[in-house]
Image 1 (cartoon, rainbow, N blue to C red):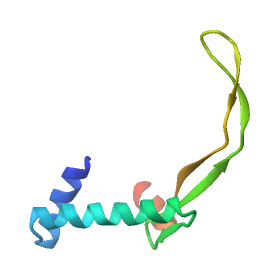
Image 2 (cartoon, rainbow, N blue to C red; image 1 turned 90 degrees about the horizontal axis):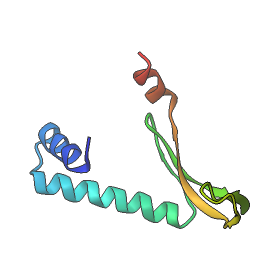
Image 3 (cartoon, helix red, strand yellow; image 1 turned 120 degrees about the vertical axis):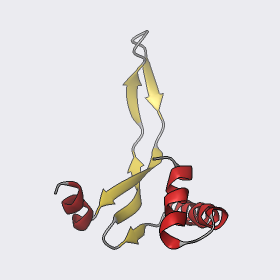
Image 4 (tube, rainbow, N blue to C red; image 1 turned 135 degrees about the horizontal axis):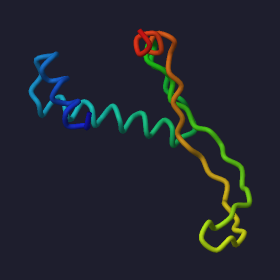
Length: 91
């Protein structure tokens, strides 16, 4: 499902205009992104938790040349599903 399809389904279920549903989703995604960029986390009861994980700097290899390269430390977004979501997926 794409973001546009999600917005259309939100509009259908809530009775919002398609424009309003898209704006609402965009705003929600921006707020989650802003919180993660600030190092925080977003917990949605019954759905899951978005957080940021730290990746340490490490040595890697270029697969085509075999040359050793340095991979810088970085941060990555992480999602941990809630038990309610796991149960719904596996039922």
